[in-house]
Amino acid sequence: MRQDRKDLRVLHVNDCAFYAHRVLEDARKRGLPWGFYPRAVADSSRAGLAGKLDYARQGLAWLAGLASRSLRVDLLHIHSGSMLHHTRFVPKKYVLTLHGTDIRTLQYDPRWQKSIQQGVRGAAAVMYTTPDLREHVAGLRADAIYLPVPITTGSLPARQVDASRSPRIFFVSRWDDSKGAAEQLDTARELVRLSRGRYEVLGLDWGPYALKAAESGVTLVPKMSHQGFLEFLGGCSLAVGQSSGLLGSSELEALGMGVPLYMPLVPGLYPNNPPVGWGGPTDPAGLAECITTELFDGSDLEQRASVGVDWIEKHHSTAATVDKLLAIYGQALR
Image (cartoon, rainbow, N blue to C red):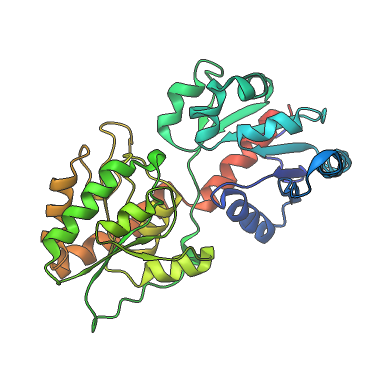
């Protein structure tokens, strides 16, 4: 059996950070028989026994839908270890993509541990999306594959910066501990202090520390649709990534759009030298000083923009991800 069979029927279950969405968009263009089944969204607003029964009914209906669809495909591709608590009841061969919190945090929570760890061990293949997850999955699956978040640069909106207005610096991640909120807030405060009215500091009104960001002088913008977020991002002079030192989907999208990205990176974690400004260990004062210095160097920013797009196309293209998935699927069904 060829390892890259294009006739395999695959059902993607759930989506995280538009991973499945991008993969399926490319698959449709190739005529691949891949489909999608979203995660259950049950309404639990009713109180009492009736509410619990209705909630259970909705869950069973979702599970029945997955079971019936699984009969018509060769393989399930499950996105997120958190889904294993439910999909374990469907006796179908599956591959699994781990996206972050599922394997980094939930697998150590007693409520989730059994389903996630057994599910990881039972998968025909396991993939993970950021290199830091390797240490959390290696003990369960030494053969796990690093397959990063795909970005389709051709589907991203064009970058359009209004040169007549003050430069905009945009924090692209939510204000949350998982994103390094404390250091992110320190960076924001320092940028506001250094601005002296020369530029705007913006961030999303999202996350438990959003109010602290506003109190620090950050102008908050409301949560938007994904397309709205990308269009807003494209109008900014540069983006500031999360202070965790990891490249999330928003940071990758910024690079793919040609928006210069500044953030710390975990030393030695990324093998392909992501082209981000600063890029060293977490240092809010140093990062803010770097941003303020380079913000008004137009030639440097434009070079960063071009290099970022090239890097995404080389290391994170959706087409390359689909090619790799074809081989993984074929191997899984041998």
